[in-house]
Length: 247
Image (tube, rainbow, N blue to C red; front, side, top):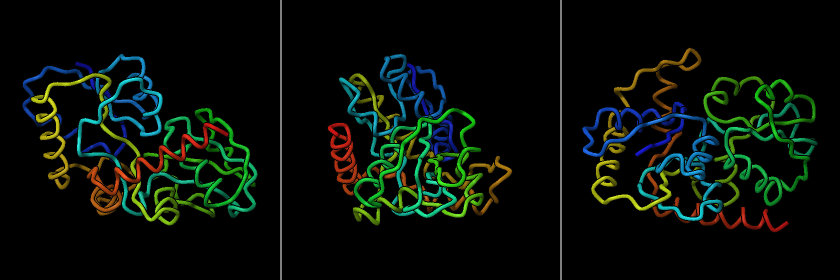
């Protein structure tokens, strides 16, 4: 079995748990940016992946196999809209090529909450230098953590969703494209739980976060439980995506 996981700091507890667990099922773990994880699951190059939730409508067959996710109750601190001007003065928004969930969330907030109608631009790899004047940009993951003090206006997208809907947000879920055995699912969830329960054992390998910031990000900004509130939020988010696609 091939498994794709996201190569961000917020995935470290999952990776730690998987690494330390003694699995009976043999598998190959690969790490990528979120958009590549999604692409590999859609193309059936992997059987299981930590996938941006916006991809769910594109899957002909899918199974959410875990009660753990990448989510946030309030501010997530690593998914931002960066801008040098206020929302009402933004003319263009560059969309991050690394994840569809954050891009769709930005479109939903723009239309339904912020009430703005910017031009949305697909990003290339070095797009962050183009976030200037009236052009804003979505930036996620480790790059967002590194650059959150570079722009005058910083909008945390999970927090903006919370203000808009009153709900937490789910960015990514463990999804398979085929039915997996109950034994493997139980093993896998046990591994994820172990990793989350041992965040204090993770080493800070960044040069842009202090040890305290690193720990706070994983224990306070990220919320790993995929519970009832997040299920409701996910269903609402998917409805908004469907509405976007109709227009």
